[in-house]
Amino acid sequence: MAFYYEEPSRTFSEYLLIPGYSSAECIPAKVSLKTPLVKYEKGQEPAISINIPMVSAIMQSVSDDRLAIALAREGGLSFIFGSQSVEDQVEMIKKVKRYRAGFVVSDSNISPEMTLQDVLELTERTGHSTIAVTEDGSPSGKLLGIVTNKDYRVSRMDADTKVKDFMTKLENVVYADEDTTLKEANDIIWEHKINCLPLVNKNQELVYLVFRKDYDTHKKNENELIDGSKRYMVGAGINTRDYAERVPALVEAGADVLCIDSSEGFSEWQKLTIDYIREMYGDSVKVGAGNVVDADGFRFLAEAGADFVKVGIGGGAICITREQKGIGRGQATALIEVAKARDEYYQETGIYVPICSDGGIVHDYHVTLALAMGADFVMLGRYFARFDESPTKRVNINGSYMKEYWGEGSARARNWQRYDMGGDKKLSFEEGVDSFVPYAGSLKDNVDQTLSKVRSTMCNCGALTIPELQEKAKITLVSSTSIVEGGAHDVTLRDKR
Ligand code: RVP
Image (cartoon, rainbow, N blue to C red):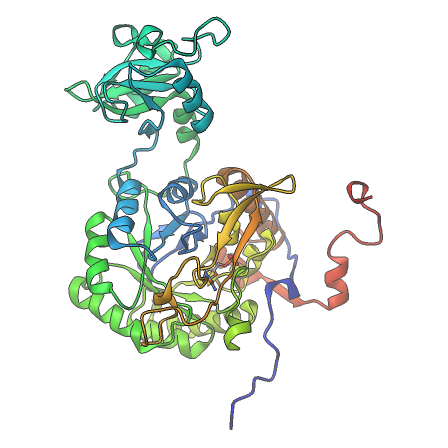
């Protein structure tokens, strides 16, 4: 006979936190959100921790190199999507690892034979007013000069005027050698009162631009997530099919951690993938596994050697797995059960295997709830898809800006490996949709805002760290009527009249 659970499975919106005592010491500025990413033995430090408990989803519409850089800058980590060729994924990893904070590869370049009209079109397209003039118009060509909006007057000049006739020629440009440190570059920028310093190699070819404003931003980010060589850290999604080819390439490219990306992780395929990694690399390559929604699934993956375990089936904003296949579980219930299994496993073995709550974060407070329920960190897709840095197009729909967001199980993503049950190499039916989400601006502004709410609620619960929150949190189920009263109610909102 089938097993029946006594209680329905529940989602985050059905719970609230009850405040605990907060002392005068317990203020948001003192909250630490540092959290383990990979397993560790009792008394030891995890090999990788993240500085904020947020990672970005392994999805085409979410995690590319640009988002990875922006998130690592804030202290979190992206998992670059694996539903692309090994070469393309490797290139994205390399771009993150090559990126030097404050050093920008110029994206606005022009050759001296081009015209003022070309300059205006380029400025319009990139939104950048500093243009490098290189011999071949490429970002790494021989640097011949710079064009900024101080070099031309549209009202007084012919649109056909050649760039070489109005650019600031190299002899009048302050530039420096490619080995210049960020600090030295900044000193030169201040000394010469300039906004941008080009760095060139010994052949006078352009390597980077350093901008005054970027240095200021960089200085402000004491949380940034960097490796031993001061490079941003980045993760990569893998699948249970082509790992023998993909994993070595990603490791070689410098991926800091891997994660098996599957809609259903309680399977032998995951164990075989982890076995391969352990055989090839021992414990030196870290790999997360999932997704599971109960204690049995967690234990299976922990015993298989996963470095962290991802929790969640069917809760993603674009996910229709529950509708299509009738499997899944309310995210809160799944998380609570897996967190208990994680703690029992720790008691028994002395090994702490972090868990990640993946999908279904709708409101900022869901992050705090997930942490309080035992998650070590959360993975978000919809949330990050809304930002400037996500890889998708921003479109105007009926006067509002939206960003595209599609599931890995949609026909658009064609990620059959994520849903593979060992059959044909194809997606037999869709488990995800193709959608739009409201555009929300920069990642930094939004993450700052979300985390300030998390810190504030943690203080309401008397907690300065995530483990303290998990120990002290008092969580209550709420009735459907109180959910309604949780928002503005029984008033007419001024802007909705
Ligand atoms: P959300 O943050 O609610 O947008 O959910 C993101 C998560 O949804 C991903 O991390 C992944 O686990 C899941 N996902 C991705 N694609 C699909 C799908 O097409 N069904 N689901």
